[in-house]
Image 1 (cartoon, protein in one colour):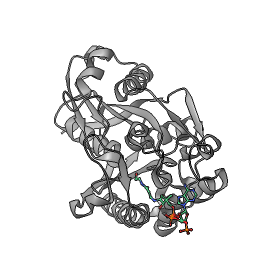
Image 2 (cartoon, helix red, strand yellow):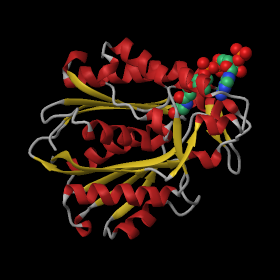
Image 3 (tube, helix red, strand yellow):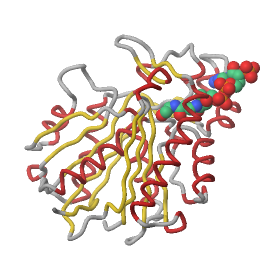
Length: 307
Ligand code: UT7
């Protein structure tokens, strides 16, 4: 079995900014309500899942310093593929000049955490360079007459490159799903995103806390051993509540949602890149990733940083 570590990362956000103040002129809401109830001030909108994924993937390849032709696998986490068929992964593979298998993975907002854990699994059986990208453009599915959802989401992407390591840096992981709650958050073919926000909130906190605890137990770590938690960016109150229940100070949480809103599969790698840009993560640090989303799905992974 081969170990793996993250050697590169990248992000992409559309140029167009949609602020809370812009939303005030589109629906019955206020900048104050959105900031207080969600922690979001603005979000970026536009682009395609493929174009954002290509930009983020390109950066991860360059930062890792690898030859695109040497990448062995592309995993694209998304729930807003460019088309129903084909998957968007092969489009991204082609544009990046990769010579490898590529597929889409749909676990909604948990997609990047699912992709990351799958990437480590593929590395373990010999895929030496695995590019994991999370990219979504959920704003194109929003009903801008529905203030319960339209204020929350933004578009964006993030990527990481996995390469061989002497021992794996994945210390613990957990994935979960519960299809009996699929009615809480969904998009029908040709329809808009629908959500029962309060119920998603409750499930999200419980699922992330339980999942993180399982990963901590598997890794033999205590919450105090976590240097940085990189959670799915959905609502600052969800982050506050999950961190409090886990016993991890909120100051250790990577946060970009004030600027990005909920970018679904893009959110965890966008938050990771922000924490790295701020020099929060040092070699040897234990980094806890966690996400939840439609399905419901959830997951967590602890990585010892070795980039
Ligand atoms: O990746 C997973 C994605 N989903 C999530 O993470 C969603 C999780 N849920 C949430 O983030 C929150 O439930 C929301 C932000 C969606 C809603 O916040 P809330 O605190 O649960 O609000 P609420 O639905 O209980 O509504 C409270 C009040 C209501 O007014 P009344 O009945 O008390 O008079 C709503 O009508 O706030 C009102 N309201 C708004 N007011 C201004 C709801 N949305 C808005 C709005 N602007 N955008």
